[in-house]
Amino acid sequence: MDVSLEPELSDPVFGVGPAAEALSGQGVRWSLGVEDRQQPAARVLALLLADNLQQFRSFESGVLSDLDTEQLHDYRVSLRRARSLLSSGRSVFPGAQRKELLVQLAEFGRVTSRVRDLDVLLEELPRLCRAVGVVVDDGQQSFESQELRAALLRNRSGAFADLAGRIDPAGGEAAKYQAMLRLWQVVGSVHRIGGDDPGKDALRPSVVVAQATILRQFGKVRSAGRAARKSNEVSDWHRLRKRAKALRYGLAAYAPLLSEPAVSELVTRLRKLQNVLGRQQDHAVQIELVGLAGVDAGGRTALLAGSISEHLRREALKDLQNCSAAWSRFDQSSFKDDLAAAVTL
Image 1 (spheres, rainbow, N blue to C red):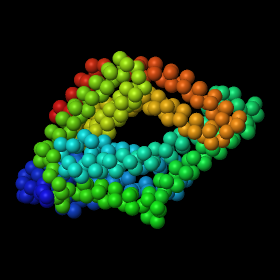
Image 2: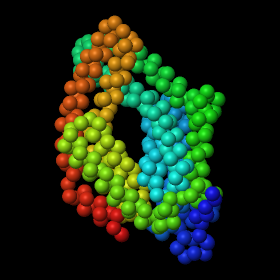
Image 3: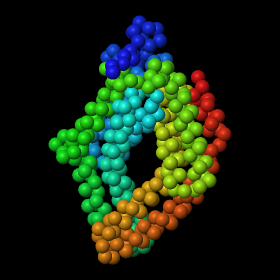
Image 4: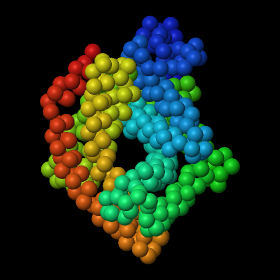
């Protein structure tokens, strides 16, 4: 069903602002601004999603060249921001298309994760080897550490081949990637071409939807944090990390509609919390990757992998204590008060 979300351009509220200029093709590149507070949420969120797609695709060549691992990092950030926007915009985007795009983005995200996780582990490997005493005094790596690195590089090569096979138009899995991009473009264009029935908040002012979204996400962060503090389970801290990331991405996306200086400080505090929680997740992933590489290499290298895994488990136990302390620092009334001030116009 085609649904028009375009009011008459003579309308004094909906017909002005950067979002309206982007819609009419007058702007060179759209960016969200305070003038867009009264624009329909469907228009603004679709434009934000389209901008995510533009940023995402700008990193493709850098990812394929595989010369700078930060290109993959930035590529993944654009992907996560799109997923966060779609998740929080369930009352705005067309339902069926939103759900299908989320499934495709999540599946592709898993393909990118394997490469990124191995990149992080390879960067950490010298430190981990030193921690278990397998680097000799002159700084040269032992045979076992070299073999472990070689096994990790082989796994990384296979993971990258899977990723490149999606992105490269000549790759064996390129059709899946192209289908994902087409759907992303469609959902980011519903304010122009229509689509499935939009969500119930599609025509509400974007600032109202942004305020409600941020407050809802904050509620989820507090619930997840207090549950994790009580259980001290790795899975609960991981859930908190994802909730905090969703709130950070939401604040960053909607900052121009809100009190931007206050939002910037909130984002910084959320990032500090995420950094602590992220180390817990990194160690859990690294234990698995080191174990697989050790099995692949065999012999004494497998023993080294076991020693590193045990060291990572000890670090993970310390992480649990750090997570609890980080949450206690974060879970203060000042954050709630500052958040309320940021979303109150």
